[in-house]
Length: 262
Image (tube, rainbow, N blue to C red; front, top):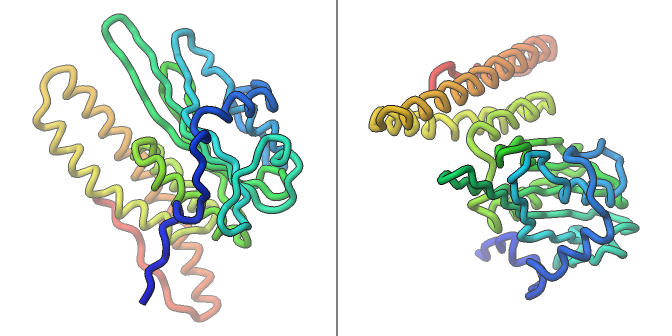
């Protein structure tokens, strides 16, 4: 039996994609505000947001890669700025960004990846790691509608395979779980909780072996992470309760509640 190809096998080779084309994208879009426009916004406005500064002096942003792909075609075809702005059909934008900052002897370097989904050059969905100052980041997530779920999954797999070091942090993934609940993707949200639990246990073990300031910092991160998990579990529980009540009315089997403890 043949095995499915990884998503990267669907892509054409492009030796100059990582650096040479980025300046062209900035020239075509300009620099926008450090916030993504609303769904339905034109392609250029979304691209411009990627080039916006964080607003904090000393932060150095670098876009390592920016690729725009016609994802309804096989293999996926790379688009140039002029074509992308008016492209009719499904289009994916993928980018890898780095933020660097130095405060005295302390040096910070963070990586984040993003994907955006467009239909007829209008923004539909995104999973965007935004640097907000001091090289801290936030995860901005908007899910695709059901009819475009496969396109969303393809972009998500691409980003995970191509930029493994730039994945959202555990805290950002748990925050994204709330969007999954709001979008009624309850199975996906519960899977996220199950994947997060072993990492929370690891963080507890790591904190026990640290000293002084490092231990205090690790314990604070652990506190925030557990609070996010608890918030997600509460949202899941409420959603499952509503689902069970609806199931009783329809005579369907009930779903189990998520667990409180990691």
